[in-house]
Image (cartoon, rainbow, N blue to C red):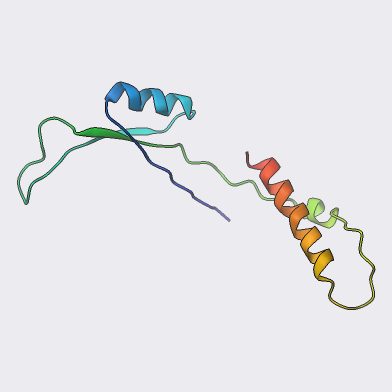
Length: 99
């Protein structure tokens, strides 16, 4: 599964955009040009936007999910507290692997 979250930054100068891209660990810098109607784009850019580099989402291995435990009493009924604790465990593991 691939999750893509794109946040674009807009900077006034090319230098600011390149600095932002460098600080993010890469990315693409593109000039923004205004176009009026069907005419040609403006000769000089009005700003620059920075798209961060694509990241690959790291999933949990089956062994990691199976290894998660929660302190629940198995009474044969659905236990919302246990389900919540289990989902928090998965969320925390994913955050740790993907930050």
